[in-house]
Image (cartoon, rainbow, N blue to C red; front, side):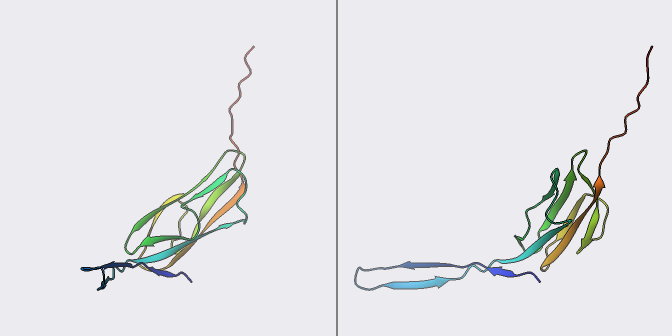
Length: 118
């Protein structure tokens, strides 16, 4: 399960050197954790997932997620969890803690059409 981060700031100041006036102003900012895991783990060479795992985002932010792989590396199969899709470019609405898994399969291979020229 994800976490919620609350951020705050404190401002203090004094009107006179001997008397300290301290007032608190809470700037509460709600953020939710986006957990991204991969299958297989660890992520094979040539594969990449954006953003980094376990990032925090402001509430109601639409976060783009992306999975890529190079030719010869395991190919992207799909997302599971908070979204289910075979599209490598998706978005996740951060209206609560979210978790997604990027699944990769057998290596990509590029098929070349060869013609023999005499």
